[in-house]
Amino acid sequence: MTSSIEQALPHTNPLIKLSAFDTPMAIAAAIIISFVGNAVVIGMPMLVGALADNLDFSEQQLGWLASADLGGMFLASIMTSMVITRVNRRHLAMMGIVIAIIANLLSAQFHDFNTLFYTRVIAGIGGGICYSLGVGCLAGTHHTARNFSILMFALVAINAIELYTFPILSDNWGINGIYYTFCIAFSLCLFAVPKLPSFKEESSSVSAEASPISANKIPSYLPKLCLAAVCSFYITIGSFWAYIERAGVDAGLSDEFITNTLTIGTLFTLLGCVVATWLSKRAGQSKPLLAALICMTGALSLLAMGINPIVFIIGNFAFNLMWLFVDIFQLGTISNLDPSGRYAALIPGAQGLAQTAAPSIAGYMLAQNAGYGSVMMLGAAGSVGAFLIYCVVYAKLKQIAPNVAD
Image (cartoon, rainbow, N blue to C red):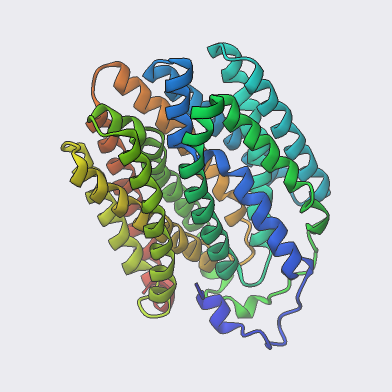
């Protein structure tokens, strides 16, 4: 996706001085660290299903275990955003990788609920450090929208791989097969660490005049509202993604049908990325983002009314189509409001907060026999909340920068 910042700053613009963040190897390393750190989130439906099948946990316990990983990622995101400009990023990446490997090894050894809960929190911290660090490095590049789009394409590929391989790993080696796979993936990340930039460069590479909105025009609450909208939207992601596999099982769908539907659905995620890139050059930020949030609300509401094979396919494909579509436009909006990338680096924290709370709330609702329809309605409410927040953001942008708000 090409943001208005990038349109204002072509590659040959003398205002740009490429930094260590912009080398191809640094960008590739940041993307690798990001998607491996976020792998547990992408594979959450199959991970929850494997925990249920192999360890026979209750729905409430499954919700707590999903929240444990995501809660650890949230804590790590906040910590990383506080220290990322003051410590050696390679050392920080090494710390996250080592923590994640040790915690996943421990998870494979201890399967009682209490011990597993704490090891998953620690694993989430390790993965969260890697994910937040990678996103922070990408936010320091000049072509942030393009690089975030590449990251999302990578997430789509990892999503397809995990949805296909996790059931095979679980069938052959139980839940330990998944945890050992995480260990291998994080170990391979060690080869990417030397390519990361060590420290943030102090000099600003883009002058204030190059921003699409003058910095002194932007109310300080607007980027914060965008982070609140990201958090609200990820209530949708957290509640849906943690329980959609279980919802399909509860509706009597076969394991093969569920796995194939979720895997093929990743192609619609890829389509969402392509459509978002195309629309960003023609329809601006606001209209596509608001329309996508309405569509996401409709998809979750459809699933809430009752799941059968047709509804499961439509709901999943619509969800996958809109997920990264929304994310791309959210990143574009925040980048327009804050070209420095400071708020973009906090996005993993906003995502983690919602993804920590959503599975636990959904698990509680299921424990109260509210049914999976209530979980889908919780997800729909998250998209409605994000829609309302962005309406406020774009109304204000209409006043101060109509060309960016459109």
